[in-house]
Image 1: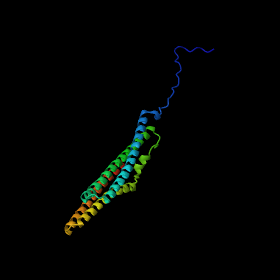
Image 2: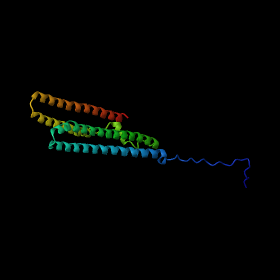
Image 3: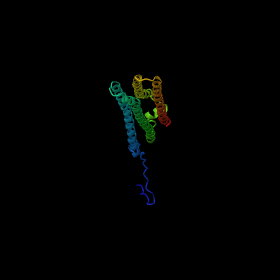
Image 4: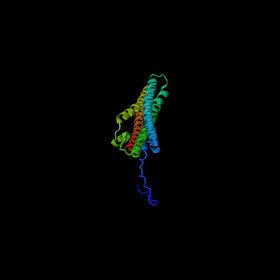
Length: 217
């Protein structure tokens, strides 16, 4: 028989059991990041949808207005200012609203890219999310649809100014004074060229600033 252990002998210690680290899948930080990711994606898609609706509404409504003015029996004193001021102004205002939605979608895309990097850092398993980040890093940008949108909307303003010039020339042709008619026609042409050129310069400057801010992030 073996001797019983003496009271002074310490009891054997159990081996420490290592618990696995908590999974990040259920962490509050990851849940918050995924919620923000979904929110930003929704905002980006909504801004894109708004841009399409703005383009369709602006071009269609202004084209209908121009067609109605061309066949209208209203006095030329009303149609000329409407064609030279209202239609170009409405087209430019529509394009500025479109630019605001473009800025909104680009800002949301930049936020999505930032959240993608944060989610990848929490998971620690490489680039699991990276669609928006790759688009920004590669500089991929569909410029042709945006250029077509700008041309479509601005063309309605140019058509309005052309129609206003036609109405003005028709009205001046019935009166005497060729020199005065030429001066008025030249003033209208200079106004149209300057207004379109200045607005296009301002618009392109803002557009490039938005793009450079997005792709330099």
